[in-house]
Amino acid sequence: MTRTATALRPDLATAPRPSDADLPAEAERLAEAERLAEAERLGEVVRRVAADPQAWRPLVRLDGAERHWARLHHPDAPADVELFVVSWRTFERTDLHSHGGATAAFTVVEGVVHEVRVDERGRLMPRQFVPGIVATVAPDVIHDVRNERAVPAVTIHAYSPGLTGLRYYSWQDRQVRLERVVRTRRRA
Ligand SMILES: [Fe+2]
Image (cartoon, protein in one colour):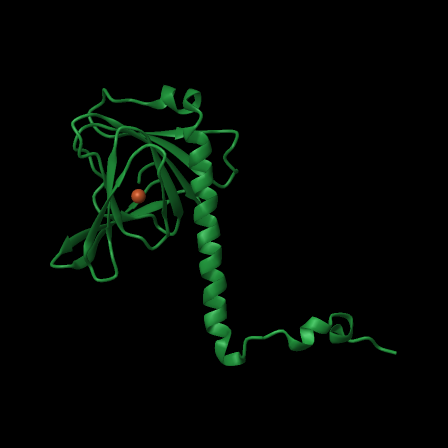
């Protein structure tokens, strides 16, 4: 006698299954779940690295002419994740940008930074980050990170896949316009 899947797993006979019409929505739901899982994975990496000041503190540089990015290699970071330590002097900012397809996460280890995102209605939405708070950044997010305080700040950033290019935007009257694409593996 041939035993069918439903004979082996009676629950399969009654479990709700997406209809053909639901498949695009189901695929999108799964893709969104994967995006969230990836962002959470990177968030956990920056949390772990932030808790290890012996790893990031030697890479802090606040005496240069501009915002300083330093590549960090850490044993807790998976091979596909690029890590950076960013040193922010007063009033330094990235300008509006996105990450060229990479998912990202960052956290503050010293000072305070502000992140501004463009929401779906074209509004600039600011958020303050203090040490201990992790931001996750989906590949299509456009944001600007700033140190608006009179004291320096230091942040830890993770990207996967590694950064290969950044897209910079202008913003006016709730309209975002792509201005330039910068090919790089070192800046965000
Ligand atoms: Fe960024």
